[in-house]
Image (tube, rainbow, N blue to C red):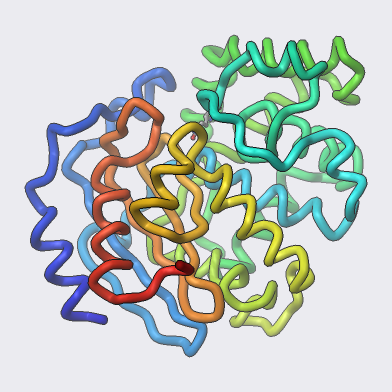
Length: 302
Ligand code: GLN
């Protein structure tokens, strides 16, 4: 494993200039495009890290997996009355489909879907923003994880499209809270900063039948972990989900901070960070790295 990771890292060390660092949330534009890190955690407790794996970055939409996992045990199948479980085939912040489909987002991993999930969490969890941080910290086995106020504030003032999504859902009756409050919590969750080392550890429960290997706690049921993995496979990369399944063949989730985390059920989690994004908002070098990883290791879910 170590040799494979090193050789992939070395192959891609100069792979920059193929995409663009996200700039629609202004502080994200300041991140250097040459950052590159790979971290792996296995369910047997092995760890492999290379590159900038200690440096924290904005996890952005990767946070949508944490919020779905937090809500799943509270709501069970009722979740699927307010959000779908089909790939959207549209950009992560698209408004068009939401109008046609009467305010029910296609899935929990596009922005509209994640806003609904956060709305439900705010209704159910007192002190939600603090609880979410504790939740992520316990999964990662590290207290050194926080929101980035500059990133959250910046998205809060510039995120007109996300506010429009929330208002549209409210007009269809699929949104309970105040848009400003829910959007603030959403901006906070997207601004969480983690290193690839922390992120790989935090996703390991999804490779381990829903059990946090650090604490032995059943975070989500086996059934829910299977389902969350299925949703990551079909919807984790927006309108590039089919291509990611084709090239990499693993459930995973991306964020516009350039992070990608993927799961091999029963075996391991892998997190990659490289900030340059393709036109779908997914990390160019992250996808290339993972495609080589599954091919060279000879394991994918297919
Ligand atoms: N906070 C970002 C947004 O809402 C998250 C998008 C992403 O990472 N794809 O636009």
